[in-house]
Image 1 (cartoon, rainbow, N blue to C red):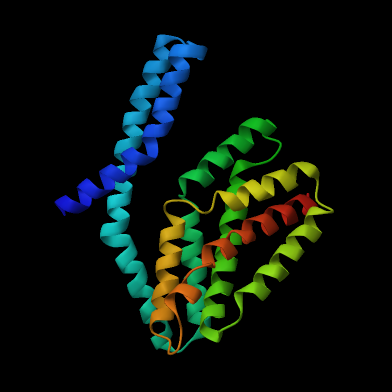
Image 2: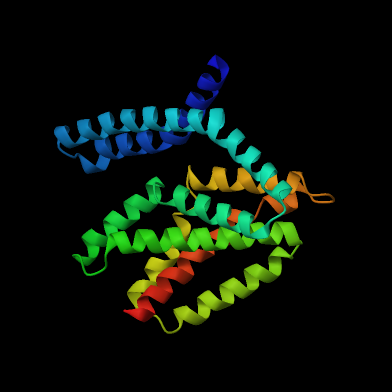
Amino acid sequence: MISLLREKLLEVLKAVAPLILTVCLLQFTLVHAPFELFARFLVGSVLAIVGMWLLFVGIDLGVLPMGRYIGAALPKKGSILLIMGVAFAIGFATTIPEPDVLVLSDQVDTASGGGISGTTVMYAIALGVAAMTAIAMVRIVLGWPLRYLLTASYLLALALAAFAPPQFVSLAFDGGSVTTGVLSAPVIIAIAIGVSSVLAGRSAVSDGFGIVGFASIGPIIAILAMGLLR
């Protein structure tokens, strides 16, 4: 346990240190923000480090092992519908609390002055991830080639982007990028690896990975469709 805490703390510090050093360099050379604002940045950075540290420890300690166990148990039930249902629920449940998704939805409300509902965008992103996660799990079970699904999905997204309002096109692709966060990505990958690990003749690398990239297309399609329906 101690080694895990130390390892994750070092990972967080390595990830956050460049940002903190860059802001400090800008503060003392170019920006010269008010001391109160700079102090709030430093306090916020410390809180972010502690929060990320605890989050990563919790994910490695219990979330990932449980995800792999759930993934390995599902094929034994012999029901594709069950696999799809669980994958949909997991995809939805892990996307709603994703920090990047919450930040984006809040920024949408602010930037649009309430013209585009951040809550609606958040649920559209979650539904898109959930739907694509369910399809991706079926792909693993049935052995569908990922390249064909990716091609068809991006062609659909590009077709929708040609007709959707411009503000929804830019929002859609940001919506796709924020789904690959610290909570949803590890859980979805863990379940996919668990599913592929109990299927004969399957590779955990070729089948278990790629699912997050595929799932991130769902929010793009969902937000573009939302723009067309407004």
